[in-house]
Length: 142
Image 1 (spheres, rainbow, N blue to C red):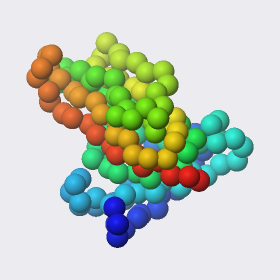
Image 2 (cartoon, one colour):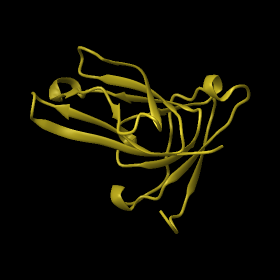
Image 3 (tube, helix red, strand yellow):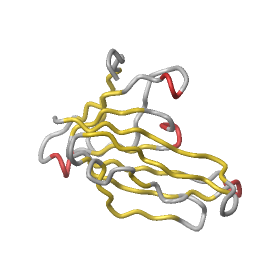
């Protein structure tokens, strides 16, 4: 990531959305440092919520931030698998769920510094993938 430009995004405590203003193709999008504001312990007052709109993003997030991923099905189009972390030391899994309506949610806590990818797939039926959701999370020391 040497030389990559960073865009800054302010996120309110217990935010339920994250608006990222970086443009361009997903592969060329710069890393976004999500600046988490709030007081009190990191584990209770720092929260980020990601949706389908964040697919393909790379985010830099401090340790101790709770990251929720909510993926909604577009009606009968498909069923989301529960999002998973590619490195559970970096993104530590918390409770997750899938609903009968095809939506899925997962919660992670940013742990040790490093890089992990949040991955989920939306399918018509087993083996018939419609969408692959990925967000790269770079956890940094605060």
